[in-house]
Amino acid sequence: QVQLVESGGGLVQAGGSLRLSCAASGRTFSNYAMGWFRQAPGKEREFVAAVNWSGGTTYYADSVKGRFTISRDNAKNTVYLQMNSLKPEDTAVYYCAANVAGGIVVSARRYDYWGQGTQVTVSS
Image (cartoon, rainbow, N blue to C red; front, side, top):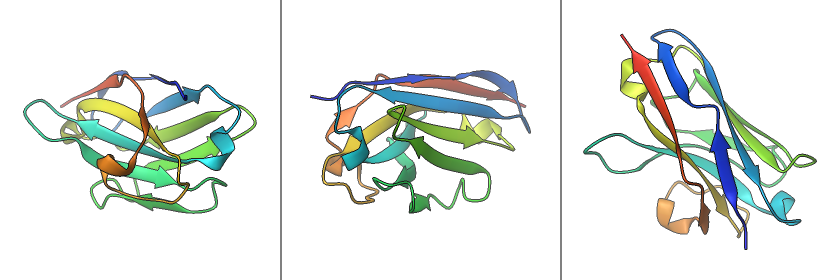
């Protein structure tokens, strides 16, 4: 069983930055691919970014490419999402998720464990 706890959300002005963290329990964190998703009110959960087990491969949604960076520290069992140049349309609850199979996938259904989410609000 893996538990994921997100932190780092908050209120920021457009153009600002936030860094989200996701701390994972369990000794097998380094085997998992990790992803970040977000869900805005009235919208479906959407893929944001993913990183493979080693951190050597990343993948981003077009809407965040060039602005967001996903990374991981396997020694700390933590994955990060650095968000720069934030826009009001980035406002959402952000979730981290773990894919036990280890590969980068964009479908939420392929992820096995989820955190509780952290709110990000970008004001214009």
